[in-house]
Length: 374
Image (cartoon, rainbow, N blue to C red; front, side, top):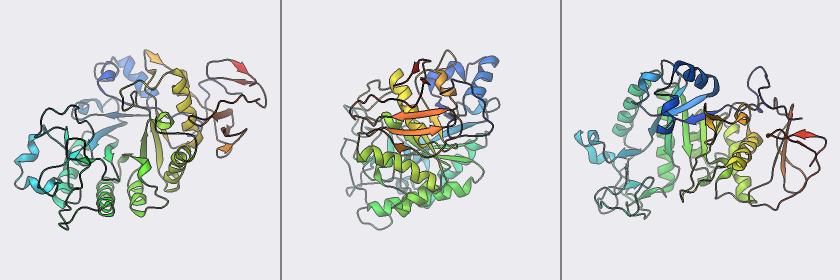
């Protein structure tokens, strides 16, 4: 059977959910403005929180397991401090015409301001002064007793660097004077993440990555980048609208395996919205994605589910503990993936695969408490 929930197993296990949240403004009633009772609930239920300094700085006294958010190569267009440095332009990436380039994320559409159409310029992560300044900023943040850093935009691709109008733009490499190559960008990224890891060896470091641009099993720069983290975050988990039955879905799961092979943990971080701003996480998707995480969990990994994750609306599945895994996932009954645990099993039909009806090897209890044999 699957015993639901609250099964006590000593020590971490692959079948136990380690739940985290991205504590944006929606969570303020449960963090910033919370009562002592609510804060005790948060400490008991949230393994980690992703938070935003300096807003959260005073609150690490009651929640010491927070990761401070910081963009890796983002120079925010409303951050005037950067332009007060003696040589600011050396810290920005430029196109062949000398124009500053942007991180494509959070670019408004339509883009009303041609001088700064996006929220973030793209930094030259190969610049030693930029790296030193970034690390100094991180050190000042971590002085407020954060458990570690959550690094966004750890992108091992140039495709996210644009001209601000939605067009991918190849920067000129300031260190060669030539158009930047992908190999050079990945080398700079590996070096920079290694420098961050070396600067804070006692802090947890999380990399939010775009997994489909390469595997640490076949790309040495990506392997270096992964080893410079403690955890690698995969946004949307298996609810990502780009995942489909076949090689893409298999590649996603194998990427998680290769992160484990590097000795690092994996986070499924399920966002509430896809790129079309449509809600993609309902009750069925919630259970489906958690099952996908259990296919790869090794006892060190973490899980973030957006839906039903507050004290006022808490899904008991986030406290699930199936105990120790009895082995790795395997294909069972057609294309369905199965993994067995001491206290139950997980079955996942790949995204977009045909529906199947399967006879179970006994009577099982579902997450919503129903007894089923198929």
